[in-house]
Length: 450
Image (cartoon, rainbow, N blue to C red; front, side, top):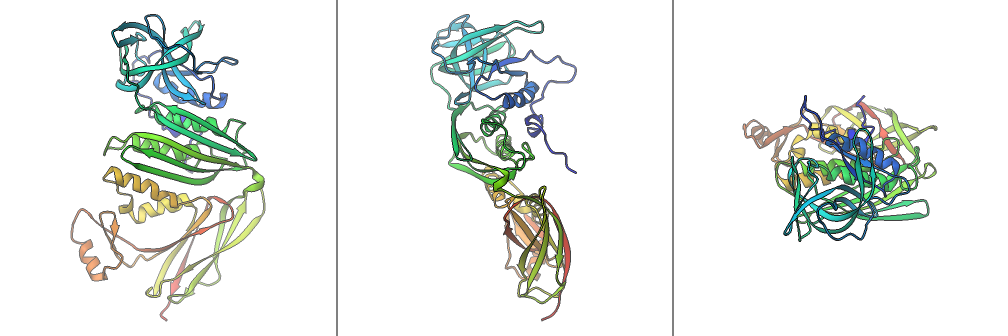
């Protein structure tokens, strides 16, 4: 079985761990997270420990919340706001020197990333925490006064003046008859942004306690990027896998990472809008596919195949559900594999059968592929009839369905690098009255001459 991620750090792939072997890691930079829940803070701590940042949650304190400070001067708190608003996360250091509008601070790196474009704020030191290992300050962000432009080995530096753009975010969480809206801004950072927004999403859905284990989470998520590009992500998932690729947190983080690490173009996230509904067990059914059967195995072209599916409801009874697939009128006689599966299995099968549709060679194609995957939903089952004896041809990402067989075969053997030969299939998506977490059934039907 494929190992599922069980934490935010594993979902992110621990890609942030970059300390070379044999070298001592830098001392952790404290982050104040006074408005994040203990659960979200713990997940963030595990993820950020890979890059030398240490979030903290001092109970009863307001660390990270907005303060009144508006001036940076030697010895004052120097704040790097990562999240500000209803959710707050700030890095705290010391301003060492101000020369004109240029500001220097910390005396050590934050992440050592070189050129950055992060908000720079004045702040207040709320507490100094002495420990035998390392002492640190807890700070509150005041007015954002400029831009942090450099994160080097000797320290950080920036300018007082223009403020860099931040990501405008809104997450509406509905639970029963209650609705709560979280509005905040997030810093743009090539490494931290997926981590920050993933933590914010986790904190929002756990604001009034963790979602019920046997319930589900439904979401509608819109991510707007520079260049008027948009991702529209929507699905529903059982709550038994909070960090899986099919969960709300996973559905947010994985596209963020794919676009942030893309090799085609620099696109920046401008805004995030999410509507999330937490469904209790009484309003949702979760099932897995156990068996598949056919009343008969022989058909004629144009007939309808009736497929009987047996599902096991979570902690409940077995239920029978039937789906149908209409055979093409021009289907030649022969034997054909028939498969019924859950959404994740269907995606994997589609990527294997039609790889050209997943071949990305530009930033716009990457957006198109991510958006196209939203047609695979967990509250549906996917029926596919393979036609292995036939040859289909695609040029680039476009299939040529009406090409005569001889022409298709000639083009498939042309040796062109942009031509892909594939076996066509008849497929159908059938919505279900429950969430299908896993399952696949296979059979073979025989098509006879009319």
